[in-house]
Length: 269
Image (cartoon, rainbow, N blue to C red; front, top):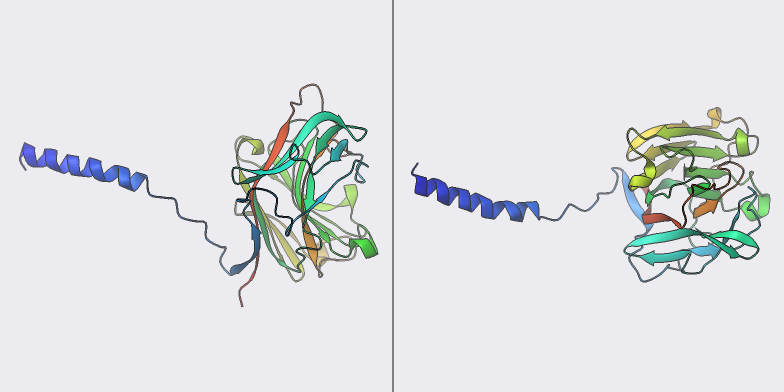
């Protein structure tokens, strides 16, 4: 092959390479065996109130939390394709911190499915981000009889650990049935991760980035199994509380919990 032909071939290859490198990444595919039932991609100008209900107040939420939840844009907004829940150190409503909490109660309630969210959690002692579910009958039967499915919780003093947990009658609070998932490298606040449960009749499975790490069935709990009825979704960022403890002098504010999407799938028929 002559030098001219080699040079021409190299030029052709070099021109072609950038086009391949700039090709868009493939869109995420739905998990095998599941079809999308409900989602929020957080691509609009603000929180979609047809899907979410903000909860407000500063009564400690049963955990001696320190924040006052608000619906102000300082604490709750959609920006850059993400839901932003921001915890701030400020006096508000008799509390010294503010944050936000939203739920799908009365908007979207389902029995069974794959519940998935891509989330970047905050960092620091006293931070307590959560993606979880409550039984839709909580107003009638109370907690923990309604059941609680914690898809992802993190407490700031454990930066490389998330928890998947069940609460029910006889196994709630510090007696809940759960399991931690340790990150192989780094800390969870460094990047987005995908957290999910697959909830089917008499079985719930927990996943982090596609890795199954926890399984619960009626025989694995120490009380009544109360997970065969509709639940709703909650996203929140608590500050302080019985489990994470309070922020300390090293905790920087503001802190943000970023949610890229929430998707709920149902089984293919």
